[in-house]
Length: 384
Image (tube, rainbow, N blue to C red; front, top):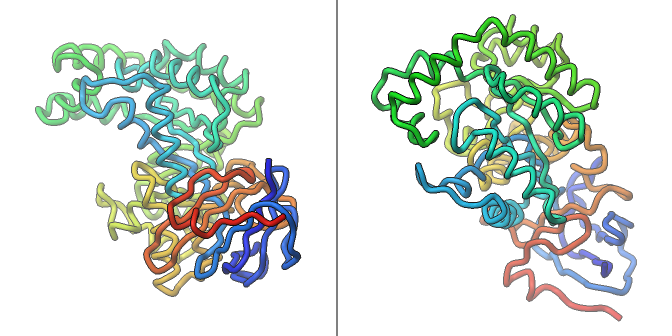
């Protein structure tokens, strides 16, 4: 791996904010932060921001590569190749793919789960792509598979999801029923019958959740809960070891979670669009209040970088605090102590950004050039 020196840019350091310093990358790490010339590739970052690589704790946009249209499916390896290219083009160097393991056939089925995990294991990816198991609470038939995959180290984050009650409430709605059935590749009547059979097993759900939580704790896998409706619900999941609160449905839940020391995750699209697509709380306001501590891509990878820059531009947060929402904080929430900040010895994950247009010029992952625009190529030279 050829050493890389980045010079001329404004570097966001872990403790000192933006500084006009040079970085030397070697052996996948940030080797030195100084202005000493050295051999290897030389990248002129004049006019650019040099920022820590983005860590996406929750993203499911890859589902559009698996199933770009209802009933139109593609192989997992093709989907992941295209997904990785999108991630790196948007400065994301670590991505937790939110893979829903549900009782639904099709896109969120056990078969898709297995295909994705197998495809991820076939090669060494440039982006550090990890598995975020979104365990659907009523999926009792796949419980043994989930436990085995957690125990084997194939799962890097567990999140508790419980969409079944909402599905049962809406199953007779023509629009919602069609959406669910199309995703599953079934008729509406078939899907309705399946959902009712699954819902009838409600009394077995708490014991299954407890087993998943115990397996995650035993494997030192971080645990999250998703769409917490009440403070009591958040408290119950925290008692199971879930210290990450994803997309709380009420502001009081988010505030209670933060008061208890939990990480609170919201979506970057909420910040970029200025509102939640579900009508929930403003992620920007909660981030500025110190309640939201992590921003994820949710369903749109380009939103992460833009969300951080928007928050910094609003003035309540400086760039260091805004960028921590998509780098240092998600790394801390998932136990990744070697990334999320620029300091000597840390993993060489960087993104070079044109601040005028919020545009990624280059992405470096583990000290390797991972995404390079034509402009970045013009800035590159070799020093003997």
